[in-house]
Image (cartoon, rainbow, N blue to C red; front, side, top):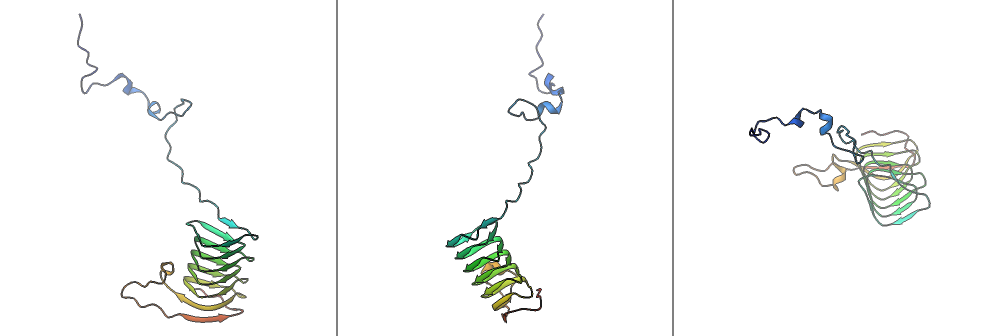
Length: 177
């Protein structure tokens, strides 16, 4: 008359298990089934721009990119720092990549430092690689370090490299190091 159901016994295939994989996919808020897709990588945000009419007194620190067109009295730390032709920085600059088109009064630390023809730098440059275009004005010393962002701390057992003094009002040769 009545027989014992085998639905709850281990090893028994449930009637739903034969459905397609699309039925197991996550539902959208509208209730539609959509296949799961991996998250797309986030796009890199654009550089923060400090406009020409902006005057900042204080330090600036970011892990992103900054383009300075105004005046900053303080230290700047960033990933990519671009100093515009109209910009003036009075303080230390630390970045992975530094492109100088304007004026810096203070120390520059960067893995890659580039002084364009319109650059005016009064201070020391500590770098891993450097390029100085013809016409750039630079007064200070240049020192190459494998890790210039680390504040000049040498690794144990290493002697710091000697600084190469340089004063050029119109550099005619491009340096690459």
